Length: 120
Image (cartoon, rainbow, N blue to C red; front, side, top):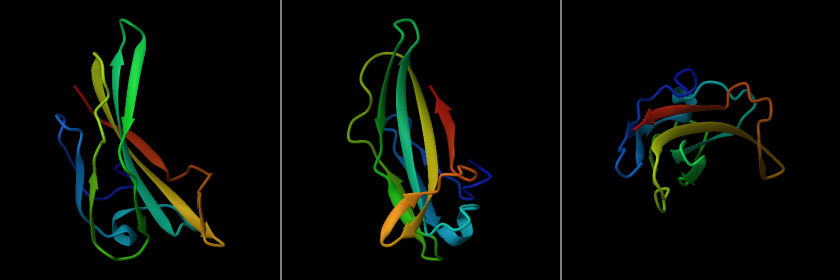
């Protein structure tokens, strides 16, 4: 993740909220050759290893044009994952290319990234 997203983020492990202040995608994201936009999203999993169960919640996705416009990114959950277990927080960044007005995920995966950012 640190090779693709060049901005620090904050995570509130009580609510799962992630904030990234002042993102200018053209400067603060690396990769996505041929991409027109970048999507940032997060996942919060509650994993119960004893019971062999996992519940995952995801945030809204913030999609930004790959330009120099500065935007504060706020990722929030509609509801945290229910149940018992270990909390695992994942941050994801993906790149899109627009063709005929439709955004397509870059499939080579070379610069798309997901990283575990906290475990509690």
